[in-house]
Structures are given as structure tokens and as C-alpha cells.
Image 1: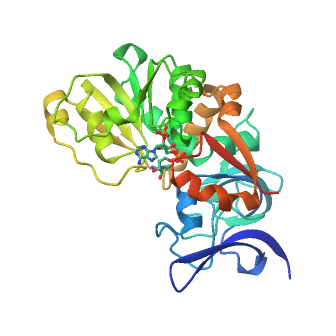
Image 2: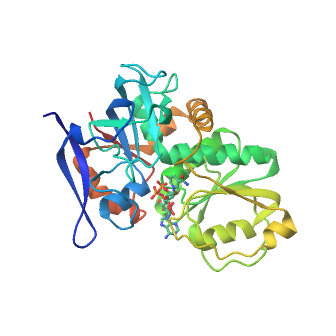
Image 3: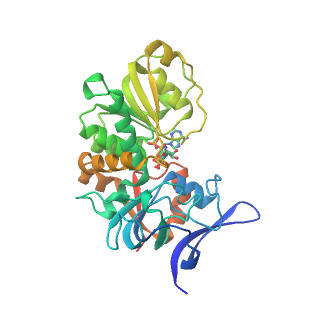
Length: 328
Ligand code: NDP
């Protein structure tokens, strides 16, 4: 019987349990490609799954982990052959399909993206779902017509995973980036990523006025709730905010005023079910528009067993930048 190391989530009397176990290969779910997982990452959603803080896991037993970079071992999918280096993010991995914190994963070939040229598997996971989502947000803003000459852009949760990559990419593209953080001690870190200004997130957390002074032409928000409402009320005429997260809450206590009086747009960003063509475009942009030295500065590497310690920390907003998990 072949087994491999995995972080398994089981249902318990109260909530769920998570443990590093030997998982039986015969229990892998259906899929036409089997991958040796080389790297995974720690995302906010992984924190929720491993701690059981929120019911993101909807099948038991589950292997946690929502993204990986790895090497194809077996494939009956026409696009992939053994030895190919691939990336997989989302598609319900770690939620409804056995996930990435495992030495092996079996998935649908249609879910995979080839590792872009010039990017290592470790770098791809240093970016991970969070960085990929940040790039989807940047592309959505560009599609809206945002350019650096339209005015500053704001990034919330800036010291987190999505926020760090968004800050670095937008700065490289020539934007004046206003980074909002609750961690004043990370101001130098954010400036080193290219932020032109660092503001205290408390400026954006009080109940929002319908319209406030126009401060930015666009933004990437990973925080939600009153923060997103404030972002919208402070967006310049014709601008847009890309909403991708809920670190402060799922609610949106906003008014329609920014939409109907300033033509502001709220752009929704989803990385999980994002179509493959959009994924390829985002990964290619990440390969070209994210400074590798900055990516290295954002990234911290951990082993399999450290996921348990860091999961509560990411939920508490204490993890800076991105965490890569060495699997194989
Ligand atoms: P991180 O924990 O790395 O970053 C979140 C950041 O938000 C924190 O670092 C902190 O930044 C800030 N923050 C945390 N709690 C609060 C709070 N109560 N009020 C205000 N700010 C807070 O997580 P990720 O970057 O991985 O994910 C960010 C969000 O995006 C999550 O909600 C996640 O679920 C979502 N997400 C959505 C995706 C999608 O497909 N739409 C994909 C990936 C992530 P600071 O200390 O700088 O203030």
C-alpha cells in the first residue's frame, strides 16, 4: 500500500481536527493527472481550514491546502505528460477536493497551468493564490481603464499576502501606491516594496460617509467591511476598487452614492473558479511584472509541520507577506 505525507482534516464531535498523517494513495479522488507536489503556500483560507475557524472544508476526510506547484507523475490528459511543471490554485482544492498539503495530488488536467518560463516552482508558490489574486485585481483595474496618470492607488491589508504582491506590482507598473496597514512597524517593509505612502488602517475603519474627499483613482482591497465602504467613498470620479477579501468582515456597510454620483465601479475578484485563459494571462504578467528581488523579500519558507503554528497567526493578521511551504 503506497502512502504519502499529508495534512488531513477530519470532522470531530466539536468542529474539526488537523494532523500530519500518512495518507493512503488509494484514497485520492478522481482526476486525470497525478502530481508530485513540490511547494505549497499558506493563505488566509488555509488558516481557516487548518484551525477549523470557519467551515471552508466541505468534505471529510480532507487534505488541506489550496494551491501547489509540482511535477506531473502520471497523466491521461492530452495536455500534460510526466515531468511537466505545473501550478494549481483554487478549484475547490482543500475545500471539496483533496488539497495541496500532501506529497501527492490528483486533479483534473483542465485545472492546471504550466509553470511560466523564467519562474521557479518555489517562486510560483511564493506568489501563490494570494499573489495570483492580487494580479487578477490589477488586471481588472487596467481593464477598467486605470493608468498611473489617473491618480494614486490604495492597497489595504498591505502587509499581508495579497497586499504585499499588489503593492509591489502596482509600484513596478509606475503607480503612486498608498499602502494601508495596521502594523506601523511594517512601514519600511512596505516602502521597500515600492509604496509611496503608508497610512494607518484606522483612517479607513470608521463608518463610511456616503461621499468623502476624493483620494485615489483605484484600489485593491483585501479587507472588506467598513474599510471597503471607505475606499469607495474616497474614490475619484470614474475610478474603481477591486474587492478580493474579507479580512475584517464579509459585510459592506456602504451607500450607493459613489456609484451613482461619481461613477465609481466595484470590481469583484474571484481566484477559485477563474477561467483558465485568465489564469494564464495573470501568471504570465506575474512572471514579467513582479520584481524577483521584492518577491524574495516578501517570502518566508516553512516546513510541513510549521503550518499548524502559522495558521492561527495568519488569521490574526500577524503574518507578513507570503509563506511558502516546502512539501517534497
Ligand atoms: P493575509 O492574512 O496575509 O493578509 C490580510 C491582511 O489584512 C493582514 O495582513 C492585515 O494587514 C489586514 N487585516 C487583517 N485583519 C484585519 C482587520 N480586522 N481589519 C483590517 N485589516 C485587517 O491574508 P491574504 O493576503 O492571504 O488574504 C487576504 C484576504 O483576501 C482574505 O480575506 C482572503 O480570504 C482573501 N482572498 C480572496 C481570494 C479571492 O479569490 N477572492 C484569494 C485569496 C485571498 P495589515 O497588517 O497590513 O493591516
